[in-house]
Length: 416
Image 1 (cartoon, helix red, strand yellow):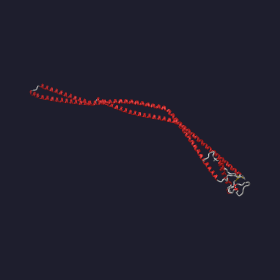
Image 2: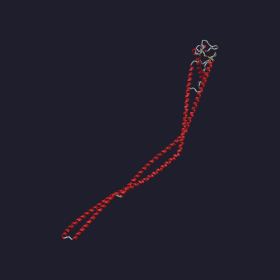
Image 3: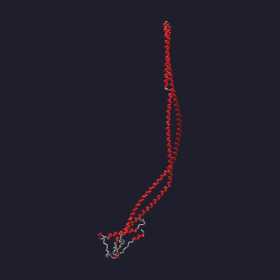
């Protein structure tokens, strides 16, 4: 486990730095002639004057103690003090980082709680606003569907009205054509012309008959005036019946021809008149049906017009109601939308602030992990130094006695 700011064993670190300094000093001072340092006294009794007997003098298996000059000792003490100050600064920095991490965690929890309270406070109000908005949208959609349906019905009625008007115009045109055909029938004109022609021929024949009669009478008078002889008279008497018979026959033929022509003309005229009467009756019946259908169409048009006017009134009322509802709820919807937008903006700001705090927390966590790794490295180095022989823990000054290392006791007393 990584120790806290107060749980770091300063004495252990000092011990480790002291041991490291001792190893470095032994490498510089006791490395032998080959390293350029002075040779240390051997264990065969070559001790400096005034030096007391160490544990090696009493026990041959223990290495001789190390003697260091006062200048070297002062430099080592200064270096150890600098390292102790650096370690204390690192400890203070690590403690400050931990305190900042705790403060950020507390601030994060506070922001989370504030966000939860804001969400809980605005949740029912937002739900109410959303419910009202959904209700208004559904009502607007229903009104829009009704308006579209009424517009479709109006368009259909307008189409039917246009078709009925076109049909009325067609029937009116047919009626006018029938009236024109009844007023000036072409067949009647032909029959009249034929009758007049036959009458003229009859008159000509009658004139010719009258002329022949006059001629016959004049001839008779001439014959009587001339006083013919008996033979001639007898001949005249003989020819007179023949002439009378011939004239009678001619007259009979002309009269029969005239009567025949008159009968034919009358029959043709009667047949044509009957045909025209039938056509007139048919046209009159068609005209009556057209008038009846036109009246029915007019009634339908009037009813459809009334229905269209009613639907127009309903549509205008619905549109007016829709505009009133839009005006009524528009301001409220705008206020709700402003509230929702403001709350969303606050939530977005809180999210951004939380993200920023999380980034800072992650950076501090990375720094903490780096410090944990460094502390773990120091701990491993300390454990490695503890497992080595403690010959360098005591430093002898001149002829003074050796000072045993008590780092294990210190570590145990501090509870590291």
